[in-house]
Length: 206
Image (cartoon, rainbow, N blue to C red):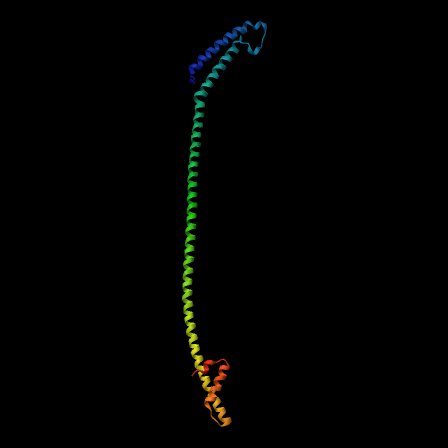
C-alpha cells in the first residue's frame, strides 16, 4: 500500500471539488424542477461548505495516518514486545522453578534413603553390640553361677559331713548312756541309713 502524502490528498480534493462544481451546475439546471434544499449546490455557501468539509477530512485523514496511528501502532508494538518479554521471563522462571522443585524432590528422596540406610545400619550395629554384650554377660553369669554352685556344694558337703559326725557322736553318747554299751560301727551305720533316708546321701561320705 502506497503512503498517502499531503499533495496526493490535495489533488484528490481538487478533483472532488471539480466534480462538486459539475454537480452544482447540474443542480442549477434542475433547480427549476424542484429538489431538496439541503442539496442545493447552486448555493455558493453550500458548495464552500462541501469543499471545506473535504479539505478538513483530508487533513484529518493525513494526521491520523501519518502522526496519530503510527504512534498508536508504536505503543501497541512496544506493549506487545513487553508482554512477549514478560511471558518469556515467566516461562524461564517457571522452568527454573520446575528444575528447582525436581532437584529438591530428588535431594529429599536421597536424604530419606540415606537416613533410612543409616538408621538400619545403626540398628543392626546396636543389636549386634547388645547381643555380644548379652552373650558376654550370660557367660560371666553362668561362670559365677557355676562357681557359686560349686562353693554351695562344697559347703553343703562339709555341713553334711559335720552333721554325720555330730549325729554319730550324739547317737553313741545316747546309746552308751541308755545301755552302757558302745558299738560305734553299728551306730554309724544307723546314722548313715537315716541320713540317706532323709535325702542326704552326701552326709554318708567320709
